[in-house]
Image 1 (cartoon, rainbow, N blue to C red):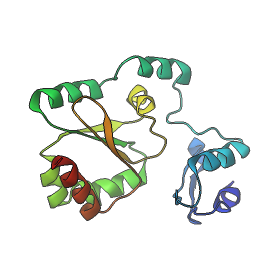
Image 2: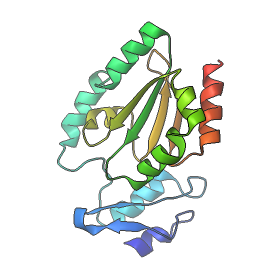
Image 3: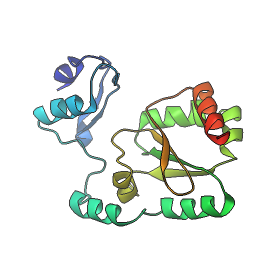
Length: 175
């Protein structure tokens, strides 16, 4: 499995596999391999890309498609009232990259200060699968910025440096 995935152009050779829960995480360069090619390779190995085990995907997708799911709906209502943007951090407790992003980027003093100007929400993809499906979260960590009407205006998948994120956030706030 690891060998087949590492043969894709742009995939980091240091793939960490957790067979005890039949899940794996890998880093790849989207400039060199498309997400669809990645999914094809994963499916070719007998695995199905998904967000969370134990969730009935079809009913979750149907539920998520109807209206903005919680807890995001509440954050959007707050943003509309306060005239702010919404910052969503989609993560999972088991996601090591999510922990690195939290420690190195989101807790950076400059980023934390900028985030105070937005309605910020951490969304655990295992607890809020309908929200993950609604926003088409296929890798973590995923950061989204929405306007107060719920329109996505920024998306970042994977790690981002504090200076890059702070620049993006300040650019969006100055619009």
